[in-house]
Length: 466
Image (cartoon, rainbow, N blue to C red; front, side, top):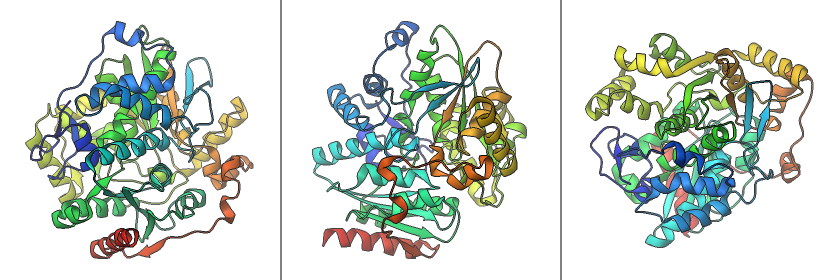
């Protein structure tokens, strides 16, 4: 399997190459040169497999020619061994045709563990094979950082530096990052939004001398391996509910568009998916785009669902590339214009294709709280402020006779204040995090400037090398 950039001017790479590269040198994102497809009998043959084996089979074509299937099987087995539910990604039925797939049974209680626990092993395997080292830089709106830190802590060939927007994550999210005191882990608190953090990460990759000096790599969903590792749980859910002999719909709360892009990829591989519903908070750029082709940036304002406090959804570029029939020059021109003007000029034909498949819903904080309360009262189910938006998007766009599967993206204990506000309850952290509020924190406050952040990354690397 070979990978090409959405902007057409970066080297073609294999799976290991895109894992280490992260962002393409031309500023684009790597996508498969051709999409693997499965026939109905191929999907049926995957029914009933343990999740680790299912993940191996789905990922094998994406890693073909780079990482053999036996190695993938070993890495998948290790990645999911520590999850605290035997099904790894259990389905919970809320009503006749509405289900939640719980993706938060990993070590940091968020769906990001589904990919990150595997990526840690993939990095180790490739770096050892190539006798190389990397500096992973990542931006987080709350969950990516802790999942990356947990997956990569104490790995000898990896230095991890995570940027988070100061004061814009929940306290649990922040402490899950800043209380990991491993030598190869550094956290930087940036005065700004997640979009500012993401822009700084992309700027570091665009600084070619710095990128080479630091041997930069990425764990954000700009890294294709992150998206690929999320495809299997969509397959697992669909097969459990009758695919390929029955269609399903997926509903996904989304900010950076990576999670729902994995659902789109499963559909592109031949999984029978009728449509994809996406949920946004009041930072609603994706919902506005789907409703009326309005992809225009507005100020990011904090919400009860901080992981979706985003206005620049990086992974949308991968979908745009496909909507443009893989016209890399057009994709580059539109993305460059978006960054320059704050408005994405998506051709009407491309927008119509997107809006035929994707449907959006946005909820403000009051509506989010009300939905959490109603679901708990009616079904006895406690959903975090991100998952509930996905659940409500699934309800809004349900199709009679077709099951809708909403993604449960985080454990409610990660957002205790939001849950208390909605229900009066304060969900307890699981035992392995019970003392989180007593643990020592360590992080640095860094100005929202590229030179300051690059200096902090350089200091982190040299500290670890000393």
